[in-house]
Image (cartoon, rainbow, N blue to C red; front, side):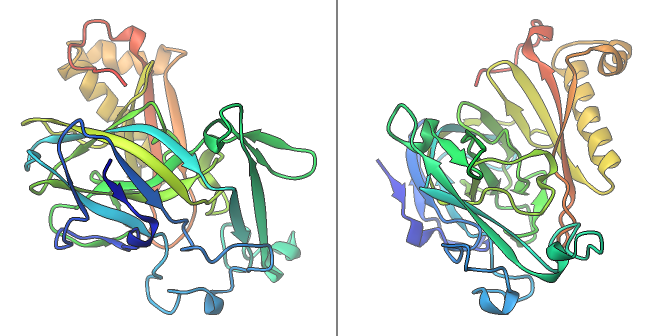
Length: 328
């Protein structure tokens, strides 16, 4: 099986000029070994998020959040849709989170000066599950609290149409650093294609994350990702769409948050009208009345140029007449 090794997963931009690391055919499973967002800097609680100590933080924007790619997909052309099927994610033996001065919304806190006056790194041990791997394991938050590992790909996308954007703050309809918890095993992510081969990148896996990723980092970890891709010819999504086993999610990133929420909802309404043959009136009224309609706030942290990321979600059971839903 074709593989991208961790020592190759060291790009810091989505760049159409990068030579492909792999060339694959639709349906072909591959393995990608990802590094963590710090490129391995955080190994213990003695490793603090002091910018002068961190490799790559002498650059602006910092060379952090490494990604693997690009992956060239045979047959993918401009105007197509790339469908990324995440088969499995096995995370490393630990993950980390780092807070401190000027980091996140409490980095200047007067109420809790220990958050703004000193750096703190937490290391979370990962316990293997019944399979003997971390794929179904648990994360040890502290001596009293643990929860299931719920890994996902934090940074995922194709090379944008014209610009080169960094892996730390690049975002758009093509993907980027979105920290969407639903970029997870068992789900399918639809991305627009702008260049021959699509030029797929991925990295920044998290072992778990709460809504909004409030501090600006979650449970950051190294991982081994297995995936395959398909191509839908001559069809392009407005923005990223996620097909889960029982629902669809329409993504948007914007500031302020209400603009991301509104635009994601508009993408969902457009799908209901164009693909599911609903009337505009029914689609518009549905999102305000259906108790199963959900807004997910995936990322809302004030870091660099990052926009806020929201998803509008609808269960598939309401879409029996939509022929192009697909299955995860």
